Image (cartoon, rainbow, N blue to C red; front, top):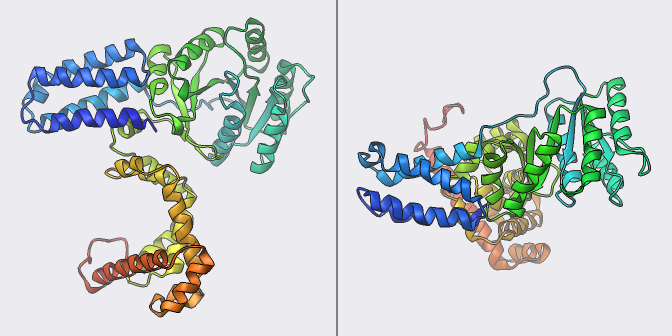
Length: 442
C-alpha cells in the first residue's frame, strides 16, 4: 500500500537523520524532495502546497531546532500533518430508527457490488441485520453477482430483475426491510459517469424515494486525482456523506487517499484492501499516516487478530510455547490462524520495523512459503509432528516426496523448529520468568 510514496519519504528522513542539528536550509532541501514525492504520487497540487506550508512552519520553529533529535521531530510533525490532511475518522451513521438506508454510488468498474457485500458483512459483525439491494439494472450479470455474493455470505438480496426502474426497486426494498425487521439496507446502484445527466437524475430520484441516511461514493484509489474530480461531481449532485476507497492494496502512489478528503471535504469511511469479502477496513487517518511513513499499524493488526484468531486457543498455544511443549501440530494450527488474517506480506507491513522486509519481498512469496511449510507438516505422521526428534533421513525423504518439496527444505524447517525449541527451553529454565504475568509460573 502506497509503497512508492513510503519509500521516497523514508529516503528523505534517512538523509535528515544523518545530520545533527538541522538548519533552515536542511529543512527546505528535505521539503523539496517531499514535495516531489507527493506530486509524483499524484497528490493534488493545492493539497501538497498547504501540507508543506504547515510542515515548514513547524519544522523551522523552536520545537525542532532545540530538540535533541531534530530529524525524529520532523518525522513526528510530518506524521501529525499527514493525519490532519487525511481528515477526521468518520463512522457510518446508524442513528435513529431502523432501517438505515445506505446508497452506494460510483463509476463503472469501481467495485460497488463487491463493496456492498463487504460492507454488509462488516455491518453484520457489528450486530446489524443487512439487506442487499440489486438496483444495478444496466450492467449485465450485476444482479446475479450480488445474489451470488449474498448466498456466499448468507445475506439476503432484494431483486426485481433488470426491467423495473431502480428508484422503485429501492423504495420497495426499504419497505421490505421495514416489514422484515432488517436494520440496514444497502443499495447497489448502477455505475455511471458523473457527466451523464440522465443517469445522475436517476440517482437523485433514488435518493428522493429511498431517503438514504448515508450516500457513499465507491472510488478506485488507483485513479489518483481523477478520483477527486469524480468525488467532487457526485458530491454536488447527490450530496455525499462518505467515501470508500477500493483497490488500496494495489495503489503504490496514494494520491487519491491524500487528496480527496482535503479537496472535497467528504470523509473517507472505509478502505478496501483486497478481493476477499472480509478485506474492508474502517478508515483511521492516524493509522494510514503511520503506514505511509513506514511506522507500521499495530492497532489494525491487533484488531485483525482478535477477529480471526480464537483467543482461548492462542492462550493455550502461548502457554505450551513458554513451557517448551510446543509441537509441529500447534505450529500448524497457528499458521492456519494467521492465514485467515490475510496475505502475510500485508500483515508484515503493519509491524513496525518489518514493513521494509514486506516491501522487498514479491507480493506472493511469503504466502507461497507458508503453503510449503503447511504441506511439509501435513506430510508428517502424528508422531513426527509431536516428536520431531524421530525425523531421520528416510522419514525426511518421504515427507519431501509427499509435500512436493526438497529434503533441503524439510531439513531447514526442522532446523528452525529446533532453534525455536531451544529458545523455549531458555524460558522454561527461568530466564524468561516474570515477563508474562498473565500466565501462572512464568
